[in-house]
Image (cartoon, rainbow, N blue to C red; front, side, top):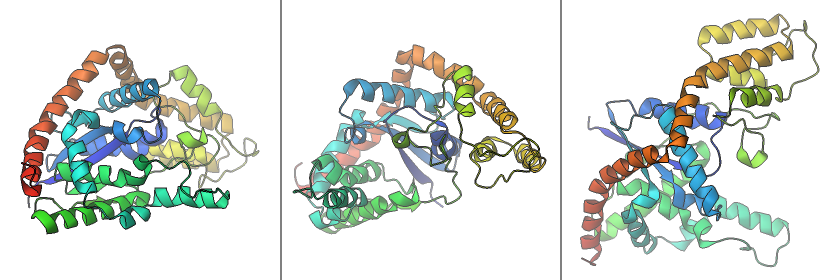
Length: 333
């Protein structure tokens, strides 16, 4: 069996939180150490511009997210870690793909349709109010991200599978016109991937303002955990761990034995204050060493840049010849 090529994009928007770690960073870091896979991990800073036009925030977020992935152990010797904006070939490829992509395909993109529906619900005069071409056509940029490096497997959430289908449609159309240059990627959906609840019980998300930042100080981490919403059950009353935010986060960080012990503690009526303290001690123990490394990296941005520049060189060693092939195929070279 030929070696698989896996690719993961990381949108540089906001500060990484516990939900990002459990749902995306931890499994990706583990995968980066798999010798059976070639791994590409990139900071999707051009994608971030769709929603973020604050240059300071974009740069800060990119640095924080880079430092987080490196501190948590991404294997940059085996994997290729780079900034999207350092690979100009992706943008040229995007235009080539745009010239072949049907507008009707983009009309069906979930993100675009959702904003149109919101405008219609609000009785806006223009259904396209507030919609930029970045939002409308970003599935094409996403396709270029994937197709440039001949990715065979792309881990995505179930809500992102449409974009992989679009990438395949776009690739097939290009290949039909110009020959079989582009590889058909497949989506990898992990239905068992953890989706953590936040402080208010809803999905942990920056848009809800209910996140627990990944690398805040131990003192602030404990303060955040103590804010997690619980019910009014008293100490001594048996508690149900299912659907309980505290237990959900605990289980995501615990060993099987620790999780079983906490289940028993719930059955025995542990008080919410004690449960929160145990959750803090567990999470702090897991993150203490990476937090120290993260702080070191944030204090030395040149070290982050050096890693990303090396990654860009590795990536461009592949993107330059790929784009040369495409330029010859379409007739501009």
